[in-house]
Amino acid sequence: MKITKETNAYCPKCNKHTVHKVKFYSKKPASGMSVGNRRHERKLKGYIGKVKGPVTPKKIGKMQKALLECSECKYNIEKVFGSRTRKKLEYKV
Image (cartoon, rainbow, N blue to C red; front, top):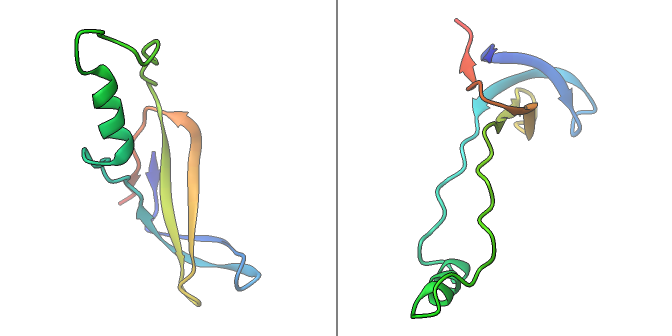
């Protein structure tokens, strides 16, 4: 999906439509040493084998998110483009 670097969008803080800068949002990878991960590894360890239930299927499409920053008040809004899509977000040149 091609998106312009600047777009006109509604800012809830200014309470009007203003020009917003578009930045692509990418989630950071989860830490391997988090409490949930350690607990999960502990349950899988040993002779019992798989304890954690059925494997959830991988979702094909992902939600493409972008951060919109208001040019007047610098307020950030997170916007989702499409519900689930295979297309990556990229800037329109």
